[in-house]
Each structure stands twice: as structure tokens, then as C-alpha cells.
Figure 1 (tube, rainbow, N blue to C red):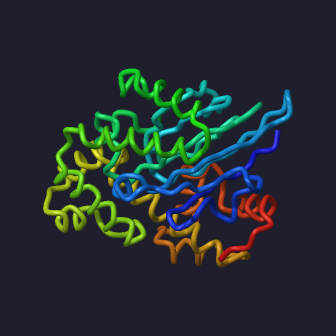
Figure 2: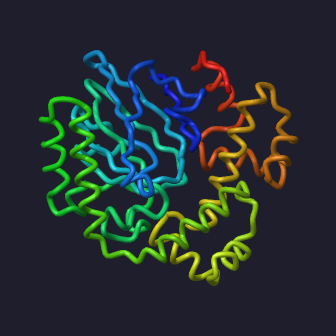
Length: 291
């Protein structure tokens, strides 16, 4: 079974040019002003597969937590059963998603710092896993899914989603200052491409390194080190879009890796493939050009 590749970086409207998702299966939906500080984007996906046919899709990590509402057959991830409605914790590892029959739903990507407010528990509690949303929302997840499934169109579905998320935000008991500190640290690490020493990040935020770890566990779902690794890898992936025939030793040094071996090891850990394998898949599965 051939494996598709899916990659979305922060500045990609739908997905990156490396991805080979069929045209018209993904659509970005608008995020209302009241949610933009907590939700980075909402994607609608629809795809139908022939009976008995399955597709595996390797999803490269973006470090975000998300909410997923499946109106069709719930995809499974890494061999586990999918949920009709679920909260997916932040992860720094790739996930292989298996899709079959009719796949249709909404994926809500949360900004760093938003998971605790919307889910009602520290983001790190579900890091690297997917849980049925009812376990966190006391049955309200399945109820919202049912209402959205019965809505007359996509705009009505999104309106129901917005209203539900705004209610959750009004009732959350998280400390805004702590979430803001975590998000500030995230921005500093991201802006440096993962190269800024964490002790400097902690000092800039006004906390100690141990407190920085606690803030990330509560509001991001990954450790500061894991976020730094992802930021460095994302910078490398952006650079590769401009270099179809890269010299890997140069890519490693320019990307902030110790050497080429370090780059290869990080690719395997964070993407599940080597740099050469990634470039081979990106070229073979995409007719799009970088830009």
C-alpha cells in the first residue's frame, strides 16, 4: 500500500507543496475574530475511497493540539481505532493515518496556549495521544457532532462550532497570564528557528527553566526542547522547498544541526524518514512547485 505524505507549516494555507492530497478534498474555513487568539485554522476534509481500498497518509508533526469532528468513517492513527469526535494532543512524532470508505469532517488546530482553556486540563495530559472528546467535555462533544452533522451546510456547521468553543472559553478557569507567558516563549523559540538556548528563553519570559517546563506542559503539550526541535526542523523543511538538489552537509549547518548525522537522526525521529527519502517522496507525489 502506497503511503501519502502530508505536511502543513504555519504559513501554508492548506498544506505544503510536498503533500499529495487530491485537489478539492481540503478547504480552509474562516476563523471568527473571537477565536483567532485560540484557533489557528479550521480545515474541512472530504474524500471517498472505493470499497475495500485504503490509503495511508504520513502526517508530519506541527506541534499543535487539535479537535477533530468526523461525520464519516473515523480514520485510525498508528493502528489504533479512531474516534468520531476527539481531542488530539500535541506531538513531535509523525503519525500514519489510515483512511477508508467515506472520510469527512472538521479539524480545528489550536494555537499554543489554547488547549488548556478549551479542553479543561493541562495540554501535556494528552500529549502524543488522542482521546474521545466526551471524556473531557462530559458528553458535549458527541452532542455537538450530532448537531453539526444535521446542519444544512458547512457554514451552519462552523457557526455551531464557533458558538460551542466560545462557550468553553467563557467558562474556562485557566490563568491568562500563564498562558500568555507560554505563548511568548513559543514565539521566541519559533522566531529563532529553535536555536535560542532555553535558559535565555526562560530569562526573557521572566521565569526559571523549571517553571518554563511547567508552563509548556500546561499550555503547549510539548517540552520546550521538543518545541525547539520542531522549530529547527520546520525551518529546514522551508529551506528545502527552495533547494531541489540540496547539499546535505550545508543544509545541516545552515539549519542549526551539529552535522549531517544529526540532521539525519532528527529527520528519522520527527518525520519517520531520512532526508533523502523525504525529498524523493516530495518530488514524486507532488506536481506543485514551491513558492
